[in-house]
Length: 239
Image (cartoon, rainbow, N blue to C red; front, side):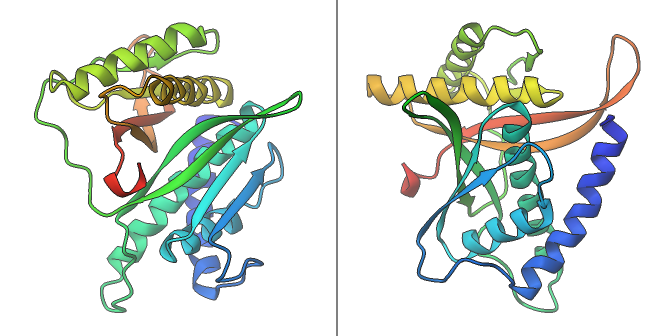
């Protein structure tokens, strides 16, 4: 799928996701405090998925998106982006007075394993306020390519986050284009969090806030859609 088509698909799906949430037609019950959605790599009803995640976040219920393989993980991230788009849409409907408690959502990635099966889980986390940049010099973007080494990327993420926690730099921004690069980026963040949890150090844990941005490549002037993943301090109540 070329970038222009991808952005158009997200725009159309945003509209359908809004309709899905308004009609409240979902298979889960109010008394299910925790739910895992296994997201496929192809044929995903993104409107239904994003609408369901939005509704569960609105109910303050824990939701986990689970992906196996680059396309599946990329679809998990797209769903989180759509939830944020819909939250923006709901906040514009001031006349209804029905505003969600959260301003936006992020996710916490975790590597999971059962037997010989490996997959990635993203816990969706509601964030009460808008993004306020930390008052420090910006960090260089971490650009992820299809052949980026995950060990090196994990180390770079850890270094950038350490600088943020020390107050030396603003929030790290990881940029990727395409399912493989997005998958590598999310896995590296999950590995970084795993190491931080195991070491039990002084660094505050982070979450990831994703967005899809159209930008022009400086090397050739082509317009592409990049996936931006900003690392932010995790809300205290979710740590």
